[in-house]
Image (cartoon, rainbow, N blue to C red; front, side, top):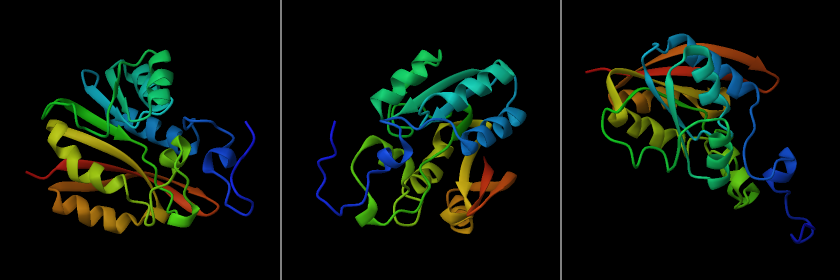
Length: 201
């Protein structure tokens, strides 16, 4: 389909990534999957929030044998994850899930800070852009993940140094979560970080 945007408009993020609607695994996905798999118990029930292609959930399942459920707001992502054998719920974060249901929750959220004038309303923009400070999805994740964690449960969140990790730590503390940095990986313009959150009470 030809690009019908007015001349001079910034390109859609989907076009920049050469992906139509679903974020495909990259360095961040691989780091999160490997790190979370190391910390998840064999009998755990895991929720992969924003599952996208289903890569992270499928890798955790393959590495540990645990049960994994995916959720994503994008119906195309739900279909791709289901093709990997994941049970998938179309959902915005945790809405349909019961309190205390999951032993572990993993999330590779959209975390790239993106100015409003650079955003486009398409599925890949929503998969990549974390809003002006990179925390448009990170903040509600941190605020709400404690509700769906079982006692002793853990959440694993992929962040970038571009996202303001100190602000995320402070928000987690307000939400009653302790924070631990489990892994980091350097890239040309950022470091990718995996944080573990656990309830403090």
